[in-house]
Image (tube, rainbow, N blue to C red; front, side, top):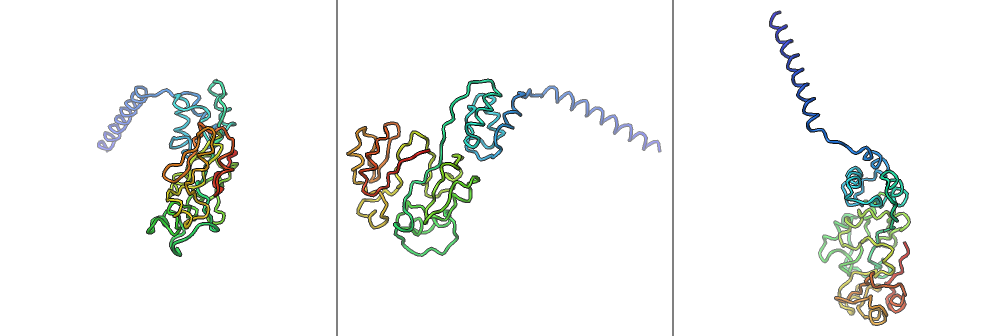
Length: 265
């Protein structure tokens, strides 16, 4: 009995000592948390999509509090979230710039030639691993199996006639589809991107004509007629410099393949 009492006293004493040590350590290593952090975290939508450049909403909130990110950094929350966070921080509200994903391919089923019948896994990543980069004659074309659709949490992408199409109104520019596309066809655009080329084929024009009826043939009509020199054809593919583009639309009018599209976010 004496041994049991001694052991009980010893264990109790150790508990008190360890408890005291933990209390002292908590005070020594205590990190002050900004009282606004939970408010900013709550104001964010909780999508944890990574579109802001951070791993999740909690990391985004911390970055905002530390001044490493702006109140309008969240693409999902948009202008309303930016306004709420600005009010919490007591800073001037900055304008929110709408952005969205854009698929640089117009090669739908009606116009794109194929090399063979694909009977594998209905996933773009799997299909892209086939010889030649997939079943389409254009090695840069959208495969249309919806890898981008599967990762979109907002229902902003769907497959229409064999290619991915983005609904700008639903898109939050989170960037998940950009990462999912094995062909690197999807980019994030902003209002400054008034006109975009819906093609990534860099083959010669004579080759493109056999691969896709909607492919850029590098004819340079867009480049030659642009009054601002905003369009350049490099490696048989037209590219538009959004910084130089004034939105006149001449490039779209001159394009014989009609693959230069006007963008309205």
